[in-house]
Amino acid sequence: MLTRLAVALTAVPAPQLATIPFRTVELSAARGERLAEYLATRLVEAGVRVTTPRDLDAVLGLDRPRPLPTTV
Figure 1 (cartoon, rainbow, N blue to C red):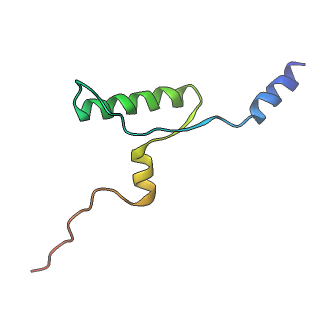
Figure 2 (tube, helix red, strand yellow):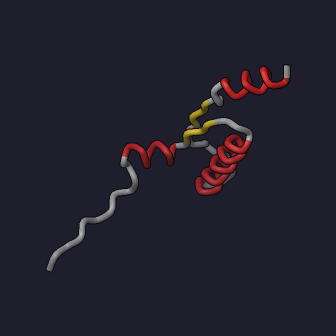
């Protein structure tokens, strides 16, 4: 009986969640970002698959543009 339950629980996919940037009131934008990252971390620890805006930026290659090297 317990073996069947264990197999059934492992067959269920982890829930997925995408987070969006927080709009904060009376908090700095940097602090709001840290709060969102903390929340995402805690959800991952609870077994939820979380996609953050930072993850999306990395996947899409939208990291902050870096200046091209100049040749002299």
